[in-house]
Image (cartoon, rainbow over all chains, first blue to last red; front, side):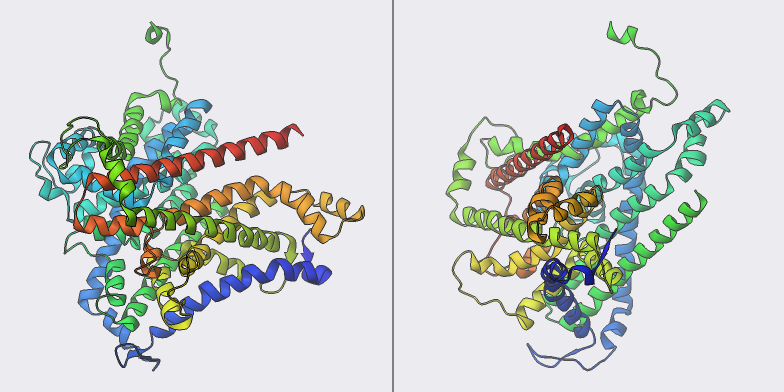
Length: 301
Length: 282
């Protein structure tokens, strides 16, 4: 049983004070300062007055910035969808592999996590940049996920020039999928692995094909796992900074790039703070939506 | 021969169906080929690094002689080292706090502890920038490694909640009666903590340390906002090199970093596995 803190005050203080103090001083206070700045005004090159104005938020609602928010949502959404389309069959195959194979496959899926994000992005630049690697990459890409290519409206192999593959929205989405695919596979795998297989057998025995079994039996049962996979992919994709910065062109700026510019080049901290908090509210909204899906699934189960 | 012996896959043996195998193979190729190409071409004897010209270690020599690259690499490892120590201590304490005690404000604290995990990196990055610029200016010109303090603090802030989550999951399997038995037998709070609780937490602590180390080593965005001109980390350095030009030197340096992280992770996983096996035996 849990103790009440009164039963061992000294021990409670010893374990509570360091982490709580750290969290307060080095996380909550910095966040609070940004929040306060979002209601402030630039009054000089380095001075900000906290006037309680909503002007920064109003400016964020201008079509230019609203468009960037919309674009970020679309890019993150497309990334998540592609990760789901590729990740689901992969997770399914892993969940139904033999224990030994399963362990190896999981390790292989997780290993890129431990590789630096910047290095992975750089590796992708090297692949997309020059003709040689592009064709190499596209060959298998075409074989395995040709749907992905047609979605972005590209023609089959051979017609590609390196210029179309880097510094545009396609590169950003590809880079985000590249980085976030493992995030999607792991929760999907754990949901599919836990699932009661007799239900699938029953569905197949009763004459439903594989596709119908997947759509009508497996997907509803794995809904909580799918929802958490979507969330865990969507949130970092929405706030992505490095990928659009390195792989994107001038028209593929996402919200994080705009925030960065406010704090560095544009030196408009109050506006940047307001944008940061809007991005954070979007994130919280996504988390709340996922929690609702989870709750509904639990109530049904 | 083997193929003839093999039966037709059963209805649920999805792993044995070829479209799914192709899918898995394609995904792994997608994840690994760029990295393998990057590593392979760090040995390529050509400046333009498109076509294979022959094996060379020149770029490793160049990378190792590049003082600013080595300095950035040392900084990254130092930051990751201190961040790991702080995160493990703070994370373990936070896990014990949330696992052992009931206290007013527990739910809000749990929520606040989850924040650094879910808040977008860019938001945390700018918060750290403002904090260290206006609220708590980190003195400049301090001796190494104190000049890395701001980055270490920023990294610890996002890494220790991850450690707390991992350790708390481990604590869930702890039999609280053991703690009571130790206390009945005369051990004080501190002895009980060190001799009973910490050994049980050990696999969680190792996993947490590993996570903190790689999170710190991997981080670019938050470091980008807290790093000064004399506190460049490896990712920030690679980023600035990329802005100018892509050279095989970057490939070589990246390969070293990949190997370092993979080796550290392998050692950590091995230690964790060994720890768990020992536990099961006893």
